[in-house]
Amino acid sequence: MKPIAHIHTDLPQKFGIPRNSFLAPHLQGYIVFEPEFALNSAVAGLDGFSHAWLLWRFENGTPGGTAADIAADAATGDKHGTTAKWSPTVRPPRLGGSERVGVFATRSPFRPNPIGLTCVKIDRVETTDKGPIVHVLGADLRDGTPILDIKPYIPFADCHPDATGGFVDEVPWHELEVDFPEKLQQYVPSEKLPGLIEVLRQDPRRAGSKHEPKRVYHLAYAGLDVGFTVDGNVLHVVSVG
Image 1 (cartoon, one colour):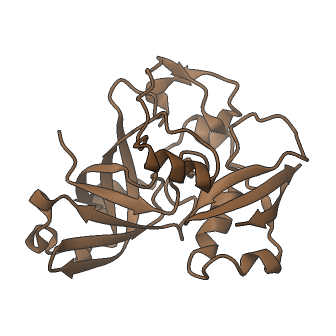
Image 2: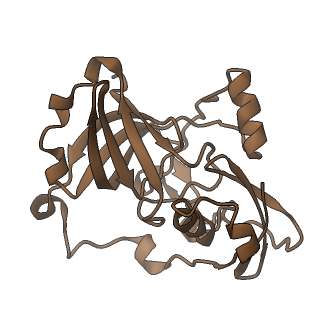
């Protein structure tokens, strides 16, 4: 299979990407098609659906760091990194990163075939002389992720109100309180601020991270370098550059 498109988001590295779609419902993204598939006729009717499924390819191994690090990687051509090996068992974040379960009982990226599945909200479908651009919300994808296919979400077939969520239901996800001073918020474009706060609320740190209240973490977001600390259940934004 080859990509039909690539998605562009405000998160250029794995650090900070929500662990599932819609955990950050205001997170913006847009899909640009490869020349072979950049036909406005190919998306005719898609704007009649509120949501869509994206099938995409995991690309693991992207180094973490600051926004400046990402720019340096791009300058040297290190865009995608290497694909990590799969494991039959993984430690899902929902279980604190300490308990192992089977990889096929999770959505871990370390799989035999690096295929991801995400449901997104369709914000709008834009048609241009160079082909369509699909604007979406709530995507849990890194900037530049290859899209293998797009399929409409069909409520009567795809929605199952009686579905159960296994261990996910047993351990509800815990969000952080975000302390974001107004003097720092002014450095973030207004349309990008809600998505950033949602990303921070999900706790970008690795599951099971030890308590280091003075450690400053860095999140690359929308071309900005967001510095923050975490003390207990409160995340404090300390810098935006």
